Length: 297
Image 1 (tube, rainbow, N blue to C red):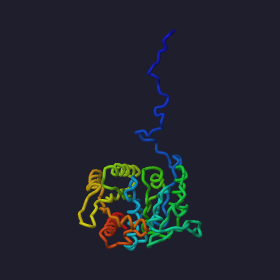
Image 2 (tube, rainbow, N blue to C red):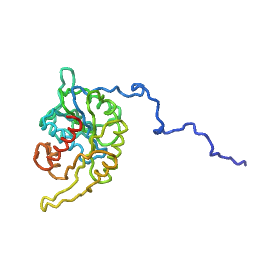
Image 3 (cartoon, one colour):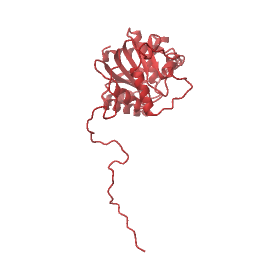
Image 4 (tube, rainbow, N blue to C red):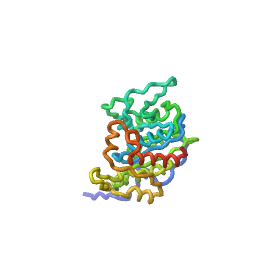
């Protein structure tokens, strides 16, 4: 019986059989040849900021809607676009419901509350119905939300991004043309390391697609006991400040951990509307003022 020999020196037929990203640069091809959509301006919009976290559950949507409301109360024509197709929050946060009407040119007309125009997938489907879509359908829906809404002229549009660094984020950065329009991102995180790890991934993603990072917001930074007024940093105290310093990013401010912020959000009357002169309300106004100066609003 002959012995069969096996060789470990076989040549692989493919250098990269799994199709993983390579370090070497790919040849630069036109966008259409690469399967990318043509970039377009969002019509009648002056400035655009994207509020991102890359991590779920850090209060990003609450901060996004309060920033939009703060811009409106500072005298700007403000709107907010909920780009979270699977878990839209803006209808609840702004206490809005109902299907948007169509304009004469067949575009969606945003709903309005507290002086802020809003558009969300949550207006187009029943809140009890899950969106079970693959990536291509999500990208098509985002394209329509970005370019088929009649905003009627805004000074600033706030984009509330979903968690992660995937299809939604790439679709937005690949479809918005920046001619005459400012686009920047505000990254939200809580101070603890488990949230910051994902926030750092978001920083890397936006830098990779050449979207300016306006700064970071530290949410749930400190809890002050309503009984004894003792302050406790439940999630840590300087995590976001540390990452800002490490990555050369501006620190935009702190939002405290307070029960009223959650209650205000759940009842559809955000803090900037319900308690504008409270310390937490003023914290939102201060961040909005800082962001506004950065983008020339």
